[in-house]
Length: 275
Ligand SMILES: Nc1ncnc2c1ncn2[C@@H]1O[C@H](COP(=O)(O)OP(=O)(O)OP(=O)(O)O)[C@@H](O)[C@H]1O
Image (spheres, rainbow, N blue to C red):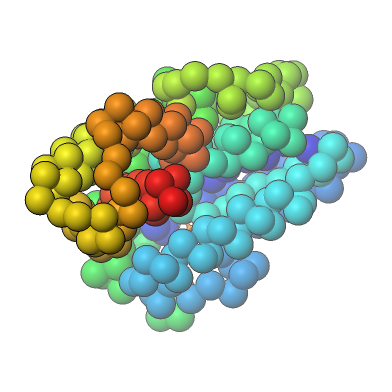
């Protein structure tokens, strides 16, 4: 049934807390508890987190596994770093679609503390210091003001888990209304929206300028994109603005974690729409 999303720095006690939760719910309810996590996937921390493509694949696999496991009887605990805001947003869309409540448990540690715990782990379990530091830098802390990060339970190392409150959050709340995901913004982070607006604007401007000198059939480069725009006819600004608005509406519903990809995605969208 509901989803518990663990979150925290590398080596911050997420698995330990996930086990505590599993034990609690197995003892105090009839429900099955599934822990979905890096451990079960046999993830080798260092090789995954040094390679953004591998990391992305692992995130997708974990999300797919959550999707498979979520049903009206089970509790699913996603025990992974879950440190990307956009990813947590995707999980929120997933639970909304499955019509089940969720909550976040943030294991809050200082980087120094987690680093010490990491150093005293077995070598096979340990993050290399470079990867540990990079993950701490990239960590996007949950913020309970965001629907997808709420309700949020922040747990310090010596705290007991607020088991009653977590249980209430999961079993005494309704699932978020399904239709909201298709309503208008804001659905994602202010930064993503800012980037989306700015990048698509820059692409339009580049096309506008390129059209002054290019002829149909030319390939036009735009800032931030490796892919090129191919024109078979000249396009006026009104049409480009309309396509930009459509692309923005679509992207708001499907925010990417990687804002570096926005320009390429917009180019692909234009190429498809203009042919
Ligand atoms: N509350 C705590 N107090 C003291 N030490 C702790 C605590 N929680 C975790 N540790 C230490 O940190 C180590 C890692 O814990 P755990 O595997 O739960 O972290 P994790 O966040 O799941 O790690 P990973 O990021 O690799 O998934 C444990 O082996 C333990 O030594």
